[in-house]
Length: 282
Ligand SMILES: Nc1ncnc2c1ncn2[C@@H]1O[C@H](COP(=O)(O)OP(=O)(O)OP(=O)(O)O)[C@@H](O)[C@H]1O
Ligand SMILES: [Mg+2]
Image (spheres, rainbow, N blue to C red):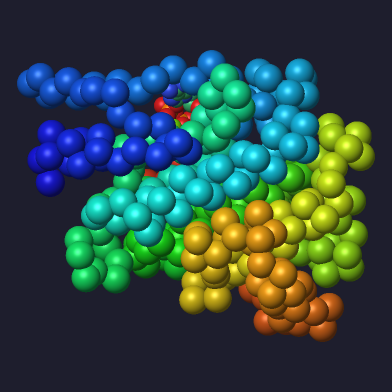
């Protein structure tokens, strides 16, 4: 699709949790996209970068950011016309406005889904650690690939851990999900919470965020929830849905064998996929 046509479509997407385009410039080979500047920078800088020492993300803000970014992505998937798959959901693409409201950014990699299409096949774009395994392997971008990345994102938000801990690649606990799932199964949620919170969090909300993250990151894409359900679950609006979540097979202690490490295939895939190393330097 021509740059200007695609940009015009993306510029029409407006939601309080999305960072909309302000304008663009296309001259010769140069392409420029203009966004509003977000004074509180990105989630990445608060979790692992420049702003991390300031500990500005208390639990209330984290919960609000999780719900807000879920709502932004749900809007892209279910309300925007045509529907949009983001394809690069990660901490550096969740920006924070002056009120610490989440604004999901960077539609540069977004994929518009023609009416009636179930998926689009593309060169894989995305960032290692957040990539759904089936997308990394087959390049089929569907909404549930974003759901997977979102699960990683909120697990990172709750725990303050990086999606892949490169410093412990030789140990068995390599990815954030491989680390968190056994703890969740043993109901040891407090151990998952970011130490920087100093124990100040709402237990039930933390539990919800972790459980939602883990069902989003299941290796079988069809088992993942849709973003509209993710929003409801995070908000805790439906008792029934919460009971179903708690009751999910994934959290039964004996179901260990049925859960394939979600990063297994993703980790092997390297072409055209960025690592987080550059972003982590911020
Ligand atoms: N509108 C904005 N306001 C404030 N900070 C921004 C804004 N847009 C981007 N940033 C920050 O600038 C940095 C560079 O952003 P950029 O999107 O180029 O790279 P990235 O998000 O790290 O990786 P990728 O190229 O995969 O999106 C990131 O830390 C990002 O969070
Ligand atoms: Mg970005």
